[in-house]
Image (cartoon, rainbow, N blue to C red; front, side):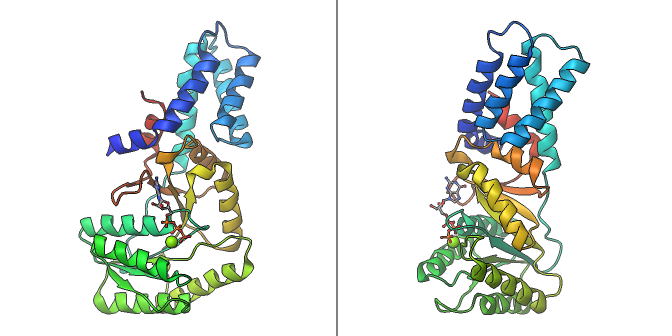
Length: 301
Ligand SMILES: Nc1nc2c(ncn2[C@@H]2O[C@H](COP(=O)(O)OP(=O)(O)OP(=O)(O)O)[C@@H](O)[C@H]2O)c(=O)[nH]1
Ligand SMILES: [Mg+2]
């Protein structure tokens, strides 16, 4: 399990290690230029300007306070500072309700359907009854894709014909779940740009209908962000959040990118918990976000 996270973060770790070696290696003393280089390295590692600046300031303050003059001793201070920020961003899925309803949202291609499939598999492994709602009715292929995941995971599926009303699918999915005593309902929504107000209104309608079918639902509305988009993921989150309620982030495709540092920026700037991380395309390549393990995987060699 740890190995999967470690290998998933390999690219990010290697790039970060090389950048930090450039900053701290062969350096004789701690000075202003070192902190400037550190800030640049963190920005390049996708922490973003704001977060990189505040991390470096915290490291600098700590170094001054502890009178650290040896550059080799700054790295552990940095690690502690990054880990602290990640820890603030952890959060667990709310599954206490029966059924628990999870709505999965995000821009096109971010990894929503794959995450739904992986979650379904995981819940099934835990012995829960799972039902998937094909609320992405835009393309026939989207429904077929979800059907494949449902079969692989051993989950029920509720679908309508392509082009149907997503809210009606959500309504039927929840009623089926109530009738069949399902534990978890996962709604796979269509990819949408936050700038398309018609699609955003559709999302609000689905939410409203879900809340009518089962008061208190959805219990989770997870925004799926593609880590390979780096700082853009952060912007998507800010804009999605402005138009719909979110309860957490699922960050996908960490395995394919050196931009895993974006997690620190998300943790630092959004105030939204990262709940899941995707580290591959296979059915069990999904993990709860464990801040300590993540911080360790970022640095350990
Ligand atoms: N490497 C890697 N690939 C992933 C991960 N998650 C999803 N993908 C891939 O990303 C691509 C898009 O995934 P989908 O799950 O179809 O994305 P989506 O958000 O449902 O897309 P739309 O419904 O079209 O908006 C697929 O090729 C997935 O295999 C991940 O954690 N790692
Ligand atoms: Mg999809």
